[in-house]
Amino acid sequence: MRNAIIAAILASVVCGIIGTYIVVKKIVFISGGISHASFGGVGLGYLIGINPLITAIPFAVLSAVSVGIINRKTKINEDAIIGVIWSVGMALGLIFISLKQGYAPDLFSYLFGSILTVTHSDLILMSILDVIIITIVYLFYKEFLSISFDEEFSTVVGVPTNALYLLLLSMVALSIIVLIRVAGIILVLALLTMPILISRQFIHDNLRNLMVSSSIISAILVIIGLLVSYTLDLIPGATIVLILSIAFIFAFLIKKYIPNLS
Amino acid sequence: MDHTNETEMVLELKDVQASFDDNIVLDNVNLSVKKNDFLAIIGPNGGGKTTLLKIILGLLKPDKGTIKVFGKNPEKGRSLIGYLPQYSLFDRDFPINVFDVVLTARYNRVFKRYSDEDKNIVTNALKSVGMFDYRDRQIGNLSGGELQRVLLARALARRPELLILDEPTVSIDMKAQNSFYELLLKIKETMTIIIVTHDIGVIYPYIDKIACLNQKIYYHGPKEKGLHKIEEMYRMPVELILHDIPHRFLGEHE
Ligand SMILES: Nc1ncnc2c1ncn2[C@@H]1O[C@H](COP(=O)(O)OP(=O)(O)O)[C@@H](O)[C@H]1O
Ligand SMILES: [Mg+2]
Image (cartoon, rainbow over all chains, first blue to last red; front, side, top):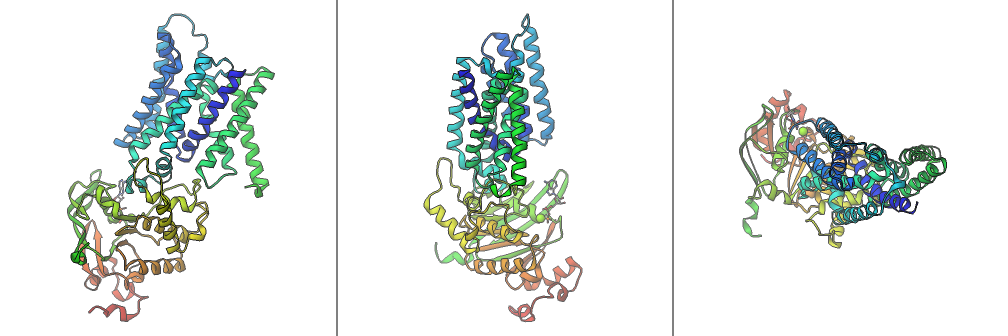
């Protein structure tokens, strides 16, 4: 349980930071593609017998960078590329897993999360990724803000927009790795969007505040979800997602009927 | 700089051709702008005006031709340009306030924070367009006219030597339009301006030169000589196009 709570906090920090970019830059669908593509890496980890979170990193980052490059340098429809990497990643993962003889016992946990079984080495990996993500966002905050707000204008004032876009997508990829243990490949998008949608009901004018409040909201709700799933013996990943949705509905109603709050 | 300033070339385009897919949008465009010119580019919708500006800014690449901005290629020269785009595609709900939007214009390079001087420049730019009191507003909480002023401040915060405005008053009401043009009149003394507009009638008194663009440049030169070209392009008599201009303006330079 202690590991689970630490994992919840590590996950919530990146949810708030990277989730904010995903929501304001409207790259939710790309993020879904990157997440599913990383399943290829999970399968590879199984096959060669190392922590699947580690092998998922290059898959996530490479698919992020390739979507970004294809998107910027060709005229191929972005939706279509995302669809391709999404399913190719899943297919690769399945093939890797089937190559390994025998049953893959906790495959399910990578798809839907398994925060209660987070290991010490998972926590170390998650912490390292957290530090990388926070450092990069700290160093490139003004560039990320500028390209998220108005990419064309950023180009005119000399921001290297394409390179920074690829860097941002790579941060999305790393944040997905951090979240896989908590919510699983299929449910990570909920964690990367709902805390932000909730705090956005009350914060309108500052990206940094949105990040901080989303992280806090995420940590509270994920821990609540964790406790609920523990007491009621429900699947944690799914329970967390449901708690997030209930909170979102509440936030929406509060904003709507008590408008002075914002 | 030196005494040759008055005739310094700000912009020079030679034989520029541009196309989307296989449709030629700009054909053999030649254009030159000197320091302190105030040039209006006019022409029908789809005539290639926005494309031309984006080529000047290095946002689009021409098929052929050369572009010199302050004697350099667009990627280098554009650091001296302030730009107010025709369509600002940003999300009106984006979590950013007016001040920070204008501050993005002060971008210098990676790892360099915005300095106090940058912030002073932003403050002055906002004051010069009368929007300093709105500095803490979320960017979507502005009227159309207020937003255009803020975006003008963003262009000015570059401390540009050339200001490029693409149909800046299309989406705003008459009153806001007039005060926008009054602002331009003040700015005009300090920099070169290129404006794309359909309000040739309103802006005529302020400008020096006209370029008529519809895939090709049909006319480029002093505004008085361009009037008959405008007449052809809009298919209406000059008196109607310029209906709201007092007659003294028309003969002013003759
Ligand atoms: N991104 C684009 N892709 C394809 N065609 C375009 C694109 N942008 C502009 N065009 C076409 O180029 C022509 C010129 O457009 P534009 O430069 O926006 O004209 P204007 O600003 O004079 O109204 C139009 O026919 C327009 O449809
Ligand atoms: Mg246009």
